[in-house]
Image (cartoon, rainbow, N blue to C red):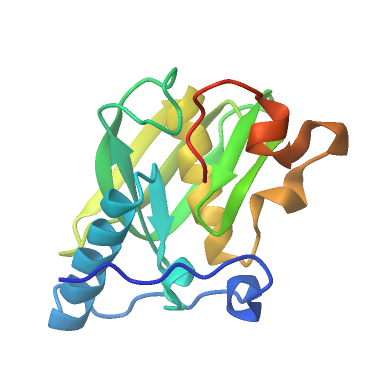
Length: 177
């Protein structure tokens, strides 16, 4: 379909809480998902939330077999997740570097739940119910935060570990976000 412009931090639409999808299998939802996938793939993203392209719906996509943005990350299966709900399976946190297509050129050290269960629906309204950990859990949390108007810099605890990619990783081939 189309690669859409990605909203950047500072755009007030990124701070809104998204509304649930109430119709599955619609041409509008199918078009949105195609545009989201085209946009994510064109920008080498690990995931994308509908609000990042200006659509205030509770829809995220994520997944890759290998990510130039996160070369050390294990593969994450491509997933369309509509109306997601996250459930912590422990209080254990894991910190790691994150970037975002809506916060280009920056990285931050972000704590996330190490292990969680997520539920939601695919594009046709079929239930998805998974228990995940590690980078998969991180990606799901990052994308679902967008649905509640939260950008990863809001979760950074130590601002000595937040900055421009080329300053944090001089001389390293870390993809720009």
